[in-house]
Length: 159
Figure 1 (cartoon, rainbow, N blue to C red):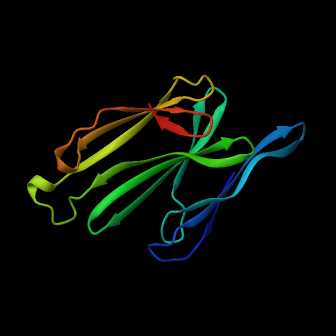
Figure 2 (cartoon, rainbow, N blue to C red):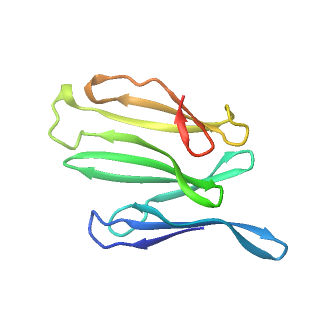
Figure 3 (cartoon, rainbow, N blue to C red):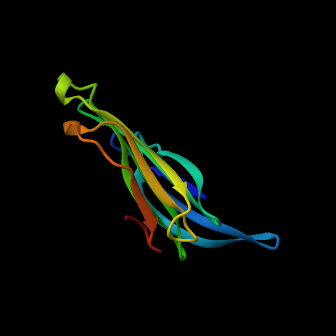
């Protein structure tokens, strides 16, 4: 269960995210993990887009995607929240797209890229690895090789 409380109505005001993981025991639900403040994200008082995803054979998480534009540069940041012990916490975060074509970029300084996240079996038998595949042009004309992240028990780390 994810709950969002508005922190205002301006562009810079997001929503405070709270969450709890519940398990059914008999005919009742019990709180297995909870966090009163997962941070603030989103804009105009609205939370970011959220998606329940499978992150392991018996593990689930919530993937949040938050988009914003500053001075003609659009970007999307993605972060993952899951239960770690009795708490819900952010265990992964990555800027997954950026585009400066709405700014006054010149042909040689323009860039636009998007990173797709793929979840699949990896080093930790209980949590899938994350493979980040980036397509498009990066700032400075750089190329980015696919990255892999593995769950360490507390968070995802690049390997």
